[in-house]
Length: 431
Ligand SMILES: Cc1cc2nc3c(=O)[nH]c(=O)nc-3n(C[C@H](O)[C@H](O)[C@H](O)COP(=O)(O)OP(=O)(O)OC[C@H]3O[C@@H](n4cnc5c(N)ncnc54)[C@H](O)[C@@H]3O)c2cc1C
Image (tube, helix red, strand yellow):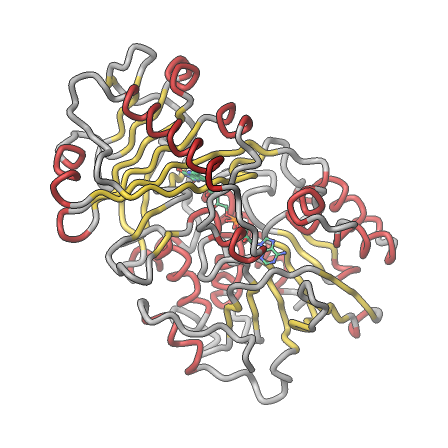
């Protein structure tokens, strides 16, 4: 069917979609488990279920073209070597034992220890020792080649590698915004149906997991202009007290934004950047206030090129919340065209801040670079997250995972992984 995800030519794991067939007993559009969101939480849930021995059909529905969510990598059709980690550039594991998925991901080469030093920038523009910013303590990992390798590796596990369930069916349906949710039936005959903005049926499922909070949160109304919050409608219709509580909790959560300047530098311009003794530069609080930047990463690319990503402070992003990058998935999906002048002004302000912050004789120029903007409206959720007791709503055949779940790693990739593993353990007995 045309709505199925087209294999992406650049990575082998995507072409596996075409090779795997749904179990004969299932209609193509009816799956055992639908997961909304193919970020780390959604992909890790699919992978954990396989490792737990679950052999049913899983479909992930995702707004972005590929997996990754806030740990995705921006790619260019014209320039296959251009890979920019426009969300998380790495991830840290602060507590042990590590999530169980780490060992198979590392063994198969999807992730590797983070390469490059971390330093910090003080309010005088001096580069000094790193600080505890929550994202740099413990073991630090990165996707091998680019950050989206983390989610691609999780999907490879979900599709049959490293599993006791044998080769199993798991499909990523990218470029798809789930707009409407419906739940009908009772008990073991419960069925979720998921529709897009035009009302077309995307998928039916016995169980549903939300790995992002969008469909439960009033920002769905402000961002997309929807008259209602989709999960709230279901919760009120069904009257399941646990679902009502979970939806209200998610709806009440706030998050900090981040406006990111993405620069790609040709080989010559990249050299002074690559010669720096750091790959991640944390901005201390006074530096954030002075320049409106939170962190800067230098990301080496093939052929001596580099990408540089300057992540804004939350305060800067808040001031420019209405301006999002014209090349982002959300903009493309909405067919929205943010005013070019507003985008240019935000890009200009971030570039200026970057030059001023790093002015101290480092000879780092952004001339000759290609510039893009990535605005994350909800980059970092504020605590407290969704409590463990609301992670699974069996009466409504619904679960939640992702970094918005309370617990170790909240607001980070570690939390997305741990919440998915915990949910998989619970789901195993009911799926
Ligand atoms: C700029 C930035 C820097 C960061 N740096 C770090 C770092 O250094 N270390 C770290 O550990 N973490 C970092 N993080 C946080 C980290 O990226 C997140 O914690 C993690 O990626 C969350 O994964 P998730 O699966 O819970 O959510 P997400 O990645 O947000 O995944 C949810 C997915 O659901 C999709 N979705 C939502 N609603 C729908 C719908 N209706 N239909 C279809 N799809 C839908 C979204 O498109 C999204 O892809 C950073 C985040 C940002 C933005």
